Image (cartoon, rainbow, N blue to C red):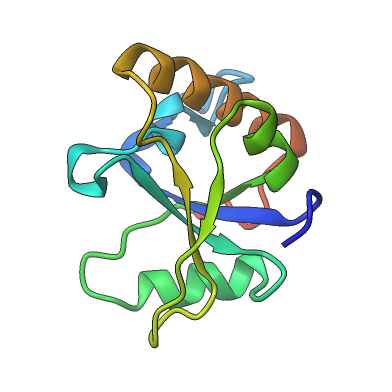
Length: 132
């Protein structure tokens, strides 16, 4: 990976503010980039150098419980600027798997970083979707 590599994150439909009468329709919340307790402070993403966003989406929604409205992406450089490293973590099923490492961050730091990552992704625009 290089600093410009995009990291694709699936957007669960519950992490969207959906007001079709507003300019904020399909506005993702910062939850998209905040690891949950089951993540162990390691936020799963796909390495954009190895898989395009649309293929990452298609693979994700075909697995049981794979719910996504689309894909937002942040760059490795954006993560590093916020002091959250990106770790390659390939698996047989997902050779492009990586995670953004929040393990050394407090809950408060994690929330602030997640909001900043969301802002970077929203500025970039949807990499795939949103699927309505």
